[in-house]
Image (cartoon, rainbow, N blue to C red; front, side, top):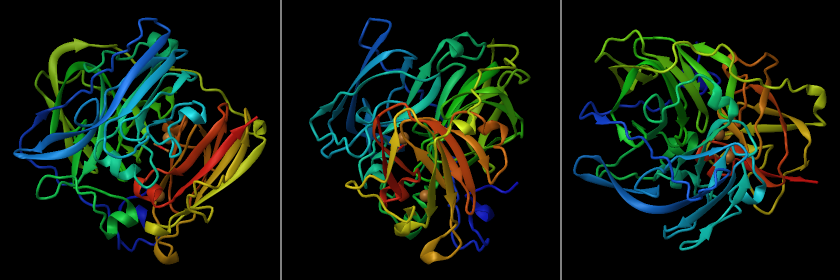
Length: 468
Ligand code: C2O
Ligand code: CU
Ligand code: CU
């Protein structure tokens, strides 16, 4: 099939003037996949959780003998996994030990604007920000990353990102693989460009400005060419496209089918069988891969457009559920008639010409005003415009803060089965119109934007308020 946002699918007229940069993983040394640690909850009360995150500079030897200057939370690169339960009262101290301002945004989390960590919440060097909120949504794999105006791309690229996992009664009772790091494995996939000194050169060339920065090397959890041992059984992967811009088409090297059980904002109603999965920047998917028919020591690789970047090595150990639950969770039928308003968003352009509804981000302007607890339909169009008004535009992943959406339709057609779940980031192809519905139960100031970080930083973002 044609893949939105890549190769032929990307160019409205198929000219191929701008192409997805090829990845070329070093065929060198394999490394064990790093598993991000679970962050310690400092509060002994089972219904309360307290965490500390420190944004800091660091160094990583991605290439032998060429240490890379990095950013990380509580470490050199990326951050620990924050894991909480629905209903928990959470307090997180975010300390900025960088020598520049940053912010920290909880992507996909339904909290009030003052705790959301958007561009208006700058954390100055040497200071601590302490948002507090109650977890008010279902089990999901969310993430956190900085969101400073014009700086998000660079800060994320240097390593500031981590997962935020919510559990609830459903997710705990379902017979799904759930041993963290054993058969429930987080995969943060990012593409990077290392210069001749081994540094993350965040110097945007023409193509990076236009399409967002794409590197030639894929990393998973901060490792190039990783391998991970998996038991002989069903294994769950919590996949985050943590890349600045690249859209992946994931598949297994032997073309084996797998199941998607969760989207950005939670579990699907039922597992969806797939042979490949397209994931744009910031989207998540929970997958189940069945290794039970493998022999001990047998391997298979996860690939992007046919290029392998992560090896699974099957051990002799048998583990996990024999069958997948046929039904996972109930997703409410959100009735279109519940919507009090339809709001239109038109994404346009590339490079410095990116806009939403013809405008670029202005911190002093509120673009949309919503009423608390209203349900709205957001009609998101990609007008397909590229550079200088030509019609060779590209796919843009649209992200809205403060809620989770259900996709009603794509160009009038029902969404594919693996998108019939909660979504906070929706890939919209050139010329496509997507309608999504959401209820806005949290008040304050929020962002909507393209999640290609170079587009966001160039102003492909707007602000909305939710007030009584
Ligand atoms: Cu993942 Cu507005 O961000
Ligand atoms: Cu977000
Ligand atoms: Cu974009």
